[in-house]
Image 1 (tube, one colour):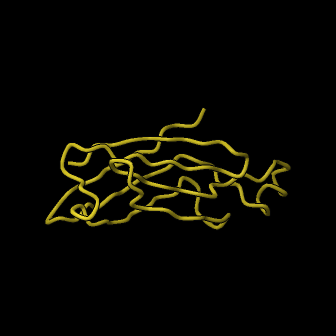
Image 2 (image 1 turned 30 degrees about the horizontal axis):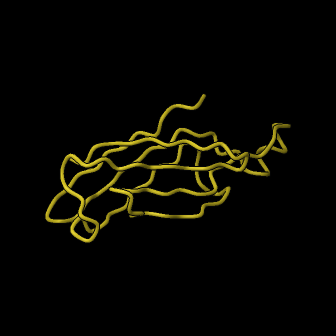
Image 3 (image 1 turned 90 degrees about the horizontal axis):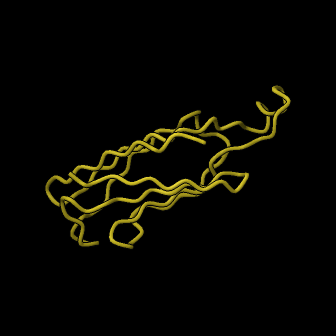
Length: 105
């Protein structure tokens, strides 16, 4: 089983800055062919606070191994405050889904 995604979310002046480090080998088609393995990489990522999507992205095989993501969102627009939980979910090519969460500080 893969390690959980490490998440740090910090609220400052009405903006939440999120830094996340996903643990995934991100085998592209070319790398998988050389290693005689099956290609597998993260294809879709979402982040939610209080049930509202604050980050959504479709990705490709060109992200690095253990991808690092950084994004910001307006806390007031979604009603986010310190102590709320940010939930980050990713899905890979094989259909594996992983959900991790972190508190907004």
